[in-house]
Image (cartoon, rainbow, N blue to C red; front, side, top):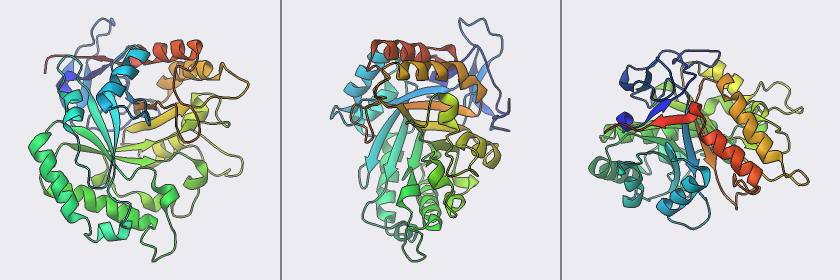
Length: 350
């Protein structure tokens, strides 16, 4: 799969380039010269799916529409005028993933893609119970499914956005320390059962109020079980452009520097994924989405540690409509962004 998706960009940043560089990275598995862009520097992808040039382009397609994933993705790709490098999919509890239909999205030789699987292992067990082994049989069943049916590398995030589920009482079973222990238990057990193709992602909400909690730093499970770090910011009333999205701040939390700045300091050697992002409709300002998408296009290269952007496309998102083409101007700006050379991928023979 890595050999089929290589990020191509006219502005290549090495793994440690710029203020947001990702530091030393594993040796590249495969490489290709950039095609059709007049660039002489090769682009590489590491064993952890980190592109040295530009960033992956992804989407969670038509979420809450009720459409099967293949149909939702096909519709979203037609709307944005390109295929996705990453498809964001959601699973819960005992569901086995990827499904046959989801595997077909990766195995399509003409339009190969990577999967970002977002898994919440249980809504009935506490994190402490999972860390103590309560779901070992479920994890083992998933591992058997993966080793039998799916050997392509994929992104895996476990119970994303845990901040608003934390209960700080020491014996709640849902403390930040319990989360870190749960995450470690799931990853280490999957690996012990033969799952070597999961590229693990730790996904934060990207909100200053939660990041300012005294327990926030303790959520992190450890470098040995986390390959990428991620945030899920949305363009709400406090956000006017990409800078204020990626480094969202609030006057009532003056000590918080913004997520990208914090991640640069806290995880200088980790690639950053914007695993969910979206722009809501803004009452009285029907040009906001267009201007916002234009700002992403003009400013993304200021943030070279961001190695993947995965849009959350939904008419029914919890806080508003995040469809990227709710107006003609917004649709054009998003298509221009999606097809920008910074996110351009070059399929090669698998």
